Image (tube, rainbow, N blue to C red; front, side, top):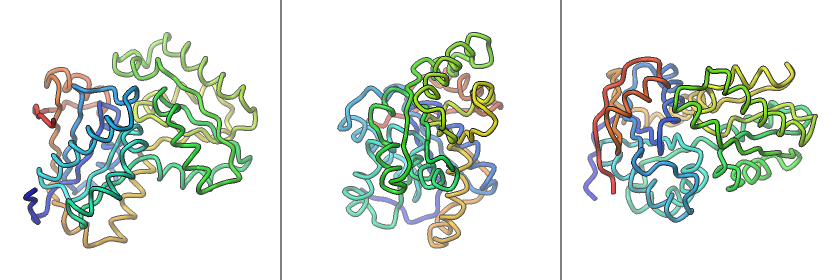
Amino acid sequence: MNLSDKAGPIGVFDSGYGGLTILRELEKALPEHDFIYLGDNARNPYGTRSYEVVYEYTLQAVLRLFEMGCHLVILACNTASAKALRTIQQKDLPGIDPNRRVLGVVRPSVELVGDLSRTRKVGVLGTSGTVQSESYPIEILKLHPDIKVFSEACPMWVPLVENNEYNGDGADYFIQKNVSQLMQKDAHIDTIILGCTHYPLLKSKIQKYVSSNVTILSQGPVVANRLVDYLQRHPEMDTKITRGNQNRFFTTESVAKFQESAGIFLSKPVLAEHIKID
């Protein structure tokens, strides 16, 4: 693979639209930096797919972003972070380019949760795929063996967001149901991780159904803060990122559909381009 050493944007990859909530926070934290967002919407969702398929698709996307000039790629997708990140970091990067980096969204939240939880009882709200992967309990156990994790799959939440129904009364039914089921697992849960990048759009409704002493952790601000810290600690990487305050958006699906849905997540018009990554 012929990769350029010239500076380029930060790559942000997701299987769909949820990673736009991560990008939104990255833009706030690093307003001068350039970003490329790549959504593999044509093959979404990833959550129901095997580890092997998620790894294959994610690696294809990472390689494409490298080819587009990115030296640093953020997997703004819980499924890709859980099922593909470690293999790409350990097996693929050394052979592709040992100076390039791929980072995920699971670890930053896991690191922070140890400082937030007083009762050492933590809840995770996620898609069925993320919950079944047990990525959060596994990672939390590694760093915080004294914390007990309770997970709840919320299969209706992503469709509510993507169909722009998340502000409606119908959304409250499903949110109250899933939040109540999580809290019934242990009444002492004091920290809840939103383990899906769509869920920040539902945060105000989620807060209605938990007590005021429960902290709800959205991934976007956490990932953005950790990335700022990472670039401060690795100035050699920061110099490889262009600064023009420019974002480009690519989708493997319909451009018109992506632009319409992306506007929901970013609250502003988006111009996208079509791309193939297989």
